[in-house]
Length: 445
DNA sequence: GATCCACAGGAAATTAAGGGTC
DNA sequence: GACCCTTAATTTCCTGTGGATC
Image 1: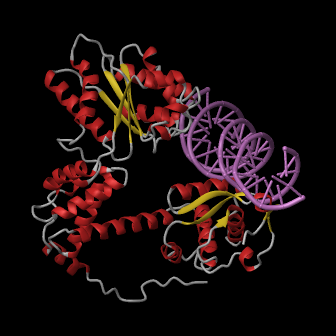
Image 2 (image 1 turned 90 degrees about the vertical axis):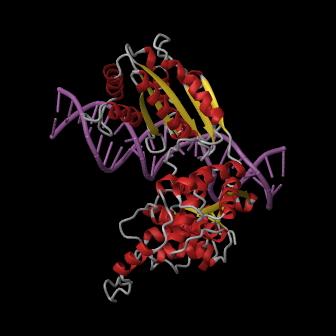
């Protein structure tokens, strides 16, 4: 077994000297927050049509005698196309206008359904936003009790006013098809409310999201639909140029670097978030190196670093079962010189590793299938469904989709896995029929 | 054309954990 | 403390699938 050595060597890194050097480096950033995706600028280039559409829908709230009803809105578009930014931008402007006119501003409840995935949690989040002094527990309350609380809070706190509930990444809601789901409830909530009104803004990356919904929810939720097209390279360049002016000191970012950054992001789905993060990372890179000029070379270096960091962080953050599964895929990949392995072979190796891991029970093959799919979606492994006929059946062939050495390093850094890093799966040592948990798996080599 | 293989993957059930109410 | 309620993870059961083989 390995030993972890702590404090064996004196550190050669002089932190005081480092801070002094850092302070003497040229100033790069005026305001680095401007390059964060959460930052909402005063101007959103190339989104005039979308801003206008949303503003036209909401404008009726400004007229005192025209009622409090506006249409629900559904926003579609790929990641980084400005859906959330435009929504926040319009809400900010509407709030300012309301204040200037002496009208009560709407209440905004922003919910990211990727973090708040269940109906219960969505309703609890609405309650907590409206009444933070008396928070709702994360579980435990019956649905009808919770729903009653939502109704009374909306009527009490927003008497004669309106509330916009923004459901970002709405497709992540798990129980969107059941009759008790939050979309069904929210789409009919105004029938129960006596004093206030609720309006919904759904945001999704998936154009076909609506196809799975109850028709009554669709008709209510999609009263107005707005599509956000992906940005092209010149549009991304405009966005970056405007942000650079506020974020970074003059004459630091080369024109070519900016264009390259825009071109890379345009190629990857026209994602403005990606372009901004690439630019920020490159600027941080030259800041650490004490340079005062950002070129194309730094953009490429930053891109490589982002991808590397993302993979390592993802692997290190995996739950233990999935980590052992990925280790099984790594071992099969390694001892087969990069060739693919079947689900059965991977499961076989996984079971062997789990049996040698203290305090861990093996998951069923059904569950492992889902975990492999998750790794595939994350881009860590790649898999394809193949059929080998009567001899081999239909199976998924799996291999690593990232650099083998990078995966190895993630496991080498963790002493719990160092014993497994050179383990040869039994079906590779003895290429015959393997039996695991009463099931037969045939080696395909 | 029927059969068989080795799963894939959907749906429902089960389990554990966290919390509320009486 | 018993019971009720929720979520999330996992298991169990089942049907479906593509292509080689019979």
